[in-house]
Image 1: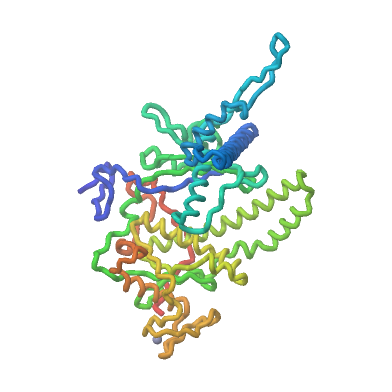
Image 2: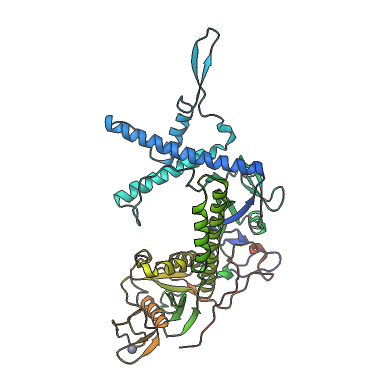
Length: 501
Ligand SMILES: [Zn+2]
């Protein structure tokens, strides 16, 4: 099948999920985040919206706790629990005397109470209240799910009231796509660098919006909702986008079912951030020292935190010092995120089948000597990035069984050395083989995946595609229909192809 493109037609490849005529499959969810540049009035309006969201969340929670208490007296009483019920409960409450009343004196001198309902709700976009009620419903659902064991992960407590001083000011607005007319959330309407939100208006942004605008005009992206929050002394907007699949040239070609090779083991560590190797002992990537933003910024963090604690509570100086510390934390997070994106992009672009070990990160954090270094490395976040990026490219990320002793086995003969300590950088086996410790573990992980290829273990995903080391870079030579895709940026990393060990 040939794509009917005016300039450079490309042959439809195997594994291409597009239909004829290049109408894209919208199967990806991604987020575009822009830093806002609001005017003084807009800043107030954003703060008012965030305050309304917090208020609505707290009010919904109050309705729930009150009805829970009443149910103890009257077991037949209804407790609104889902987002839908809570929206209705909140809307019902909004018009009552509890929400707002005024005392008026009539002509005869009699005092009457006039129920006004929630005052001035029109100043804030109604969606903010609804979304806050939905959030409250989700929090309640998470708690009940966690209690009944249906929800995995850490225990979730009963939702708590959001405090004005502690909660991150934030609110959410849904996008509406009317059949005739413009969607509610628009990009670059008045000027290229702007975002238009329902009820808020057009806000200027600092960042370039071209990529997203281009995707929207090509019909390759659809904004679902916008979340606005205030962090590190700035207002940000996160646009949640449903986007088209990556161009087939950026996806891995599908593999044969019987093909059990081609797995690349990825061993994460603290001395080298990661070592990737194939099962035949070939080291394909070694990322040396990762940036340690938290450790490097510790002196500054201590100084800022001390300065903050010395300031008088409630003072202007304290607010300033708090903002300074917030900006520092934001920078630390950015440095870490940038590095993790670079490394994960490099890996998913060059290899279609990766194996990670199942690290018990939260358990390892209990080791106080290593906790800071492990948090600074961002292993769990790295695995998350790797999984979704590989899914976008139709590759595979497998997770080895937690009890698989990848660092104790010999990658050459398969013998086991249980006397290895963390300090031993070179693995030595009873048969006299000596391999670099991290490389040995990576090779073992690749072995694990090849052995478990045909197993029914749900953690071993389906086959991906062939490793495409020579991939077209995004640029001028791209297919015009796909020029605006959210391809992770080609960023220079210090990944190098090491010679065979
Ligand atoms: Zn050996």
